[in-house]
Image (cartoon, rainbow, N blue to C red):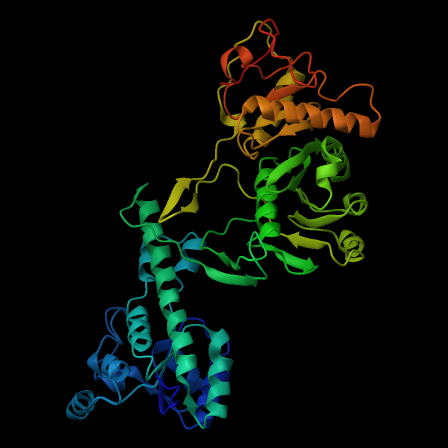
Length: 508
């Protein structure tokens, strides 16, 4: 099919987001395009001194039923769907007085934004657009003749083409806009269907759809030969998708994945209760700690495994301050993410031009419900978010000696971290800091050995008399096999001894 231009003689505009509307409508008018519009859009265009025809004049019917019915009419859909080079279509248009609509500009009722505001069910339902998606789909189907615009960011592309092609659009642009239009209505319907499923408490709806808007195209994926892009979803959970990046080059696929892991883990630590720091490398925590302030929490976290922390991601649960910023500046770091930062901290980090600083505006709620998804060959695995919090659990001591208060605090801390370490998981903790982490091994025993070995390496680096695992507690996401079911070790070794006679405390 040739890239034939189609002249735009008439446009229908109906938008809830009026950013750039008047400028765009004025530019269309200067190209000799007749403007048709609806409701508030028509009033805004007319108020700007531009000539506009209300859609009710086109249809012969006023808006009715509180605006639910206004564009669902043959004079609208015929103008959008008629194939211009089809003789039968042309005859039908002439017989029924239907004029062509060459450009459709629609952005949908703000359903997602209405839900985000916590509006009533009635308000949410009233913000489900019907006429908008119908017109968008009609125009997109007939993209051979009609251009469709679903967001203001594409206004300039249309104006550029009108200027370059004497008031016409090209097929290449119309196809691109059509593809975007269908993706937009799909994401819109996904938001609505998932809202219904949540309201009705349907855990496994017959059809599950997920939609998102592009945040950025990435240079590559997990490996250099893979393509990748980053999208946000309607869920407004504080994190890497919502964060404002103050400096540094664009985030990579792995940066985003690791930053998400770090910030989800830091969400386990209530900022009102304690300062906390999480250091992540390759999607697993390599150091986590609580402290009296962010700088002390960072130093304790770094002591767990400073080798792995090199080139890692650092997450804080409080506003980044100057002391913490100076502490972090001592080691190469890819990303820092925090709820906010002081001006002084921003200036300090600003001296490290390649260090990305992200401000998320808040912490993720560890208890919040939600969904996570993972693709498999030919399928999509969807589950509820792991929102279990150890403070909400009933804990049972199953050992001869009950843990001390300090040990119980460390055990709870260790379980907060273990939730975010890939299975098989082992987390040694002491004084509210990780002192050894073993992750992702086929055998839980191997994870324990790795964690203990890392603790030995840290002891050598820090010139300690003994590994910090001595007198520590240990948590795992599952029970140990046989008599290895021990979460409080009194005598850690390079290959941890799980002596059946050892006294330990197990959390169940």
